[in-house]
Image 1: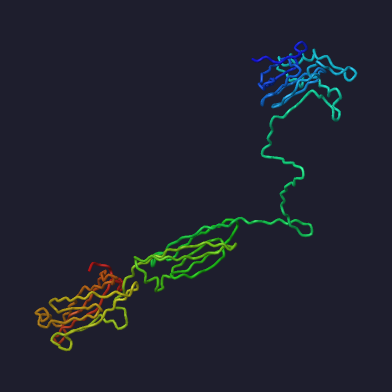
Image 2: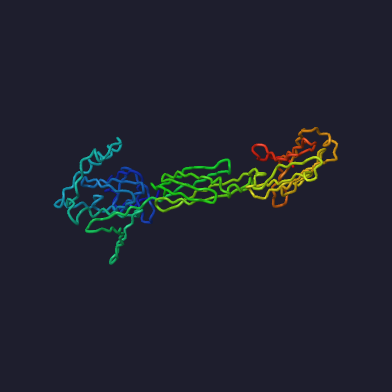
Length: 410
């Protein structure tokens, strides 16, 4: 350790109590640590560290505390080498106080509660007066986040909030919460599921505007609580024209009480309809033939195919011959049955005997590529012999389940 400058070593006093770290600054700027009870000398500079705290006992018995990051010049009054004249102040005996301080520290006691209150200095702390031998120097200080800037002639900046009012009464503007609403989705299918419903919700206390809207394939209704219902117009031709391959979408815009909007989207699926056969005006599915009668050798008629899906179904042309005659039909549904009077089977019929003939008919739905899906119907010409020995064929069209076709391979 470097030697300290001690110009008055004989008059050094034990005046120091240290908590944390404290140092003596040498003339070359180096710092030497000090400890409790170490003597201080006039001309030395006492420095406290960032965590240091020092209590100084003055010659008059007063205790002076020095906080962190401070420095004090030890002058004549502090060291007692040049005490104040007795006519100016009475200096207390410091010896007893030093012993009390050291004893209290050894016992771990609090100096502020164990010792008597100190005096205010030689001039009792009057204005512009005090101990001139104590020099306190602030090394650094930062106040964050608050900063103060003071300058001569400077202009202070102030932040203002504008409050408007009428006749001295302030008014407060209320800002409503942003409204958000859910969207709705549903699905229906021709002839299968003809309605769907759901629930919309909204935030911010908003309600929905009750409304009813018509779409291409159905209608949507909604109430103020957001409950919506979509009803398919199942009987409309636009709906019945849909096929299994058709998928349509209807989107409806719903308005909320604050003017914002949301949507309900409904998916509409089609379904293949069973074509109706022989139900058109002028259709004929029966006829009569007579054995050996030229005017009644042929029975004829027409069976029209009506398809609600695409209105493009047609009969599959065919011709079939058996022991009683020949049945044929073209794509437009025009059919004929011609009795074969030369057939032994026809000639063998007894008087009054009736024979029913059944023919399988097919119709198909035209597709864009020309292919078709076959469906089956049945023709039943009746063959009988009259009282004169002539045979008749009564042709009629029959279809299962009230003339609705059943799908088959054709």
